[in-house]
Image 1 (cartoon, rainbow, N blue to C red):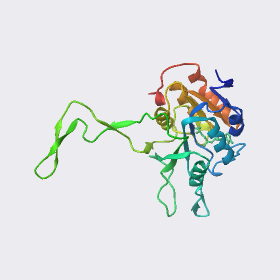
Image 2: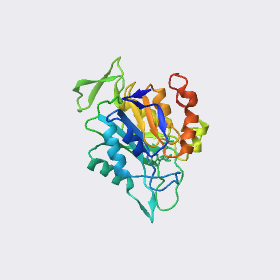
Image 3: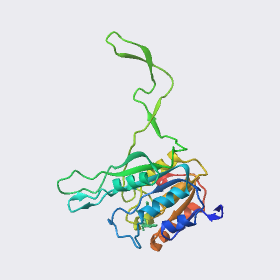
Image 4: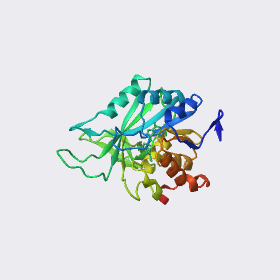
Length: 270
Ligand SMILES: C[S@@+](CC[C@H](N)C(=O)[O-])C[C@H]1O[C@@H](n2cnc3c(N)ncnc32)[C@H](O)[C@@H]1O
């Protein structure tokens, strides 16, 4: 399948800067990604020209498109590097809005030693090109679900409530909780050949929030293919870049069975 002559639903095995240079302008609705964190992991062919990446993303993203950028810092000589903040500020300097600083909270992180609390979270920045054009918020029942607020107050100034038939919902908060690790982040065993995979549920939550069916989702650091899998199963189009041939191969193997079927999305085989 092509958009303006550009092949989509495919992983380009190359530096994402090159993929973006070949893409027509403004064809992407959402970017869902996690860049390499400092030099925490020795990815094959690691290369990270941040400014070129941000400028490329600005060019290929539609007006109102968003980038979900999941990132954390390495601790070096006793201090966190601050790379996550530096990156966020650079996005702002180069024209994006920092629309929301969300948190990806790991329920079960690797325990850490030393004079620090356990590292439970990563940043999940939402950068936007102007005001986000799509927002389908995830909701949860309110505390007073099924109770309606009567306008009058009781004698002590307390609000009175009465039971009603409707359910009331509110947007969830911007801290997202996930369990991670073998057999939990995904049921696809092959994905664990990559050292830093997304939990599928995180990708699911973000894609349904910021896109509609038929939209295009791009992951410039595709790794094991999580973004492609979830985007496809949610009826979105997708594009990926991955610099390592080995990881592209893993991702393509992982995706094979999903791409040839158009079955409805099931998370973790449920
Ligand atoms: C944090 S991992 C992404 C993992 C992915 N979210 C998943 O669920 O599997 C980052 C990936 O970016 C790739 N990478 C690093 N620099 C790159 C570049 N300039 N262009 C494309 N891919 C790159 C690495 O090889 C690595 O697989």
